[in-house]
Structures are given as structure tokens and as C-alpha cells.
Image (tube, rainbow, N blue to C red; front, side):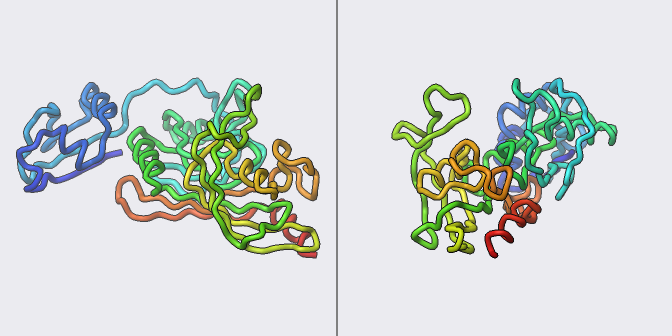
Length: 299
């Protein structure tokens, strides 16, 4: 992947490193790697980062670095690809599969499937998940194909420019049609997995809106927008407010009501494309199990 730029009059007289950081938004860490592998060019010639640029200089940065890949076994796992370009791979994750290998789930993950998919195309890359979902949550996840894309998208997350929206079916109907849950979340003492509301926790903000209610079943379909991205955030917040997610085996007592996993789906993600800086929106339809749950509740 290439980044190209023509030096402007305002940038003339600055160092190449200044333009790389402020014009192309490359991190100090990435610039160091690119410099070591001679991936930075000015007017088609490799150049040092302390070079003083001139107006109309043509900059070219080759982002395909030689780097050690993680020891992730390629496995032929079906991938529902929503979008792909030289920067990223956007998937509609199915429920029941882990995003990245862990000590508890060393294989049969989305990452194993991506390594296999890229290998079939003759490409070997480090797997870089930008967004993650719990094992039983479905919907949109993004993988970066290079360090630059990963860093830019993480910057967007910190600046609230990386916008994620979820749909969830809850047991109970919120009193207000829409609202904001602002409760800090921390790891529950004595548990590796569980989170809970705690004054000592990290700030956590979830906006919700009732999209449809089912009074006969005391249930509702909610839309969620996140300002923060804590582990299990929506699930913990809903449980704390008295309307837990259907099928949530960790945070709800009534777990086997019409669905075998938590009824939570990441259905919309909005970002600025790392290269064009234009708004890009990805959507993923509700999976059949949540659609089926809504049909039952509608009866």
C-alpha cells in the first residue's frame, strides 16, 4: 500500500519527518520502522527524515513493512466479508466464534480464518483487529491490513469519530423512550471475565433508544450508541438498569428464553477512511436468530 503527497508551499522548509507526522499522520513508531526499511521516498529516491522538503516535492511512503507475523494457524473458516480494500477488511461476524486466539480459544477464531483467506491470495500479513466483539455477539468488526490503518482508526476511536451502533433485545421495557447510562465499569474482583458497576471503574457511557416494545412479553428492541468501549459495556449497563439482554448467560438469570446466545448485534459502524478521510458507513442485517426472537415477541 502506498501513501503519496505533493509538498505544499506551507510545508516547504519543514523537515520530511514533520510532513510525515503532520501531513500524513504517521506515528513516531511507524516512521522509525519505515526509515529502517527505506520505505520513504522523495522524488522517487529514498530519503532521510531530516531532509528539508521543497514545494512540489513528491513524497511516497510504502506501508508494506517486513514484519514478524503472529503464529496463527491458517484455518478454512467462512468469512462474511462486507468490504475490503488495501487498508482494511470489514466482516459481519457470526455468533459463537472468537475474534482472536487466546489461551482459552487458541484456534478456530476469526483471525485464523483471515490468515487462511489472505494466504489463498498469496498474502502474508499480521492480523490487526481494530474493533472486537464478544464471542456470542454478532455484527461488524474491522481488521486493519497495516499498522498505519490500525493507528488511524484507533485515533478515531479516541476522538469519538469511530461510531458504532448496536441492536439488542432486552427483558424489561425502559421507563424512558431514550436515555443515557453513565455508570463506571470495572473488572469484578475474583473473576477474569465478569465486569460490574464500580465507583473505581473506568468511565462508561451508553446511549439507548427504544425502537419497539413488546408489552405482552415485557420486552423491547433497543438501539445503542457507545461513547466508550469497555468490555461487556452494553451488557453490564443493561443489567444494572434492570433490563438485561436476552440470552445473556453472564448477566441475566433468565437465559434460555427463545434464543441460545445474547441478543446483541453490531449493525452499523461509521468511520473516516484512513486514506481518503471521507465518511464510510458499514451495515450488517440482523441475523436469523435475533430476527426470529423478535417475531416470537411480536405474537
